[in-house]
Image 1 (tube, rainbow, N blue to C red):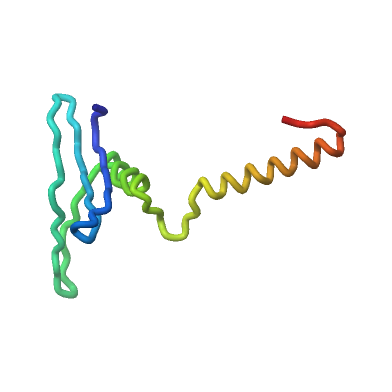
Image 2: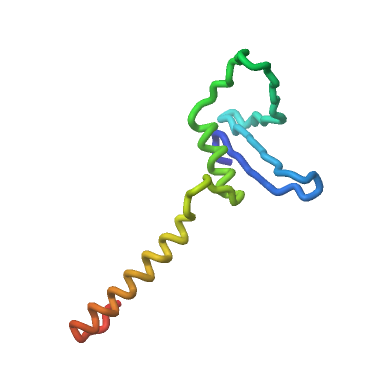
Length: 105
């Protein structure tokens, strides 16, 4: 098993929501697991101390959400833009090939 933080997000049809698994695989073979989130309610004007986490932890969350099908609002899926670019390049090959009188790969 790869060491470090891993995240998996799955649709929980039975519980009407999403399950998020956050696991840290340590070099000694043990595993840390985040088991719940705590939502604090505060009155206007009060503050709280947010948790401080490392970049690897946040990257694991982002990767897990992406793999689970979540995308940032307003971001086009890379596969869609890549497909359009490939179609455009194929069109250009056909045009250039016809002008040169050759078939390009």
